[in-house]
Length: 110
Image 1 (spheres, rainbow, N blue to C red):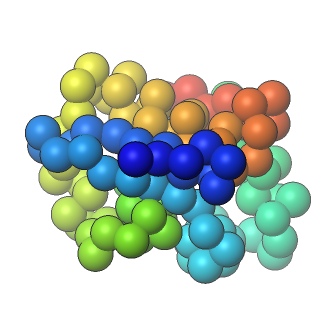
Image 2: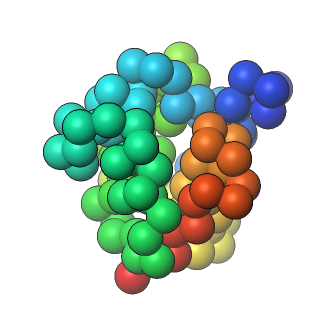
């Protein structure tokens, strides 16, 4: 079960419930992937009004790995969730809100 006080969320992909968490290691992974120098720049990047499908794959993948799941990004790219693309955007939004706070992030699919 996800613990919001630890920055965890949960989501169902392919009919299976997963715990996601952007640990410090997962955040470092995202800093490298998005080519930003620090967490402030990462928050700024996530605060933009757009979210590409590749962004969602990288964020969800890092969150899954941070939650203890051995899942690679190419596997995340093949997953399904209820609600399709808006469902994935909801998962990303909830994960970022659990990590950084609800007011600081608001990605929308592009």
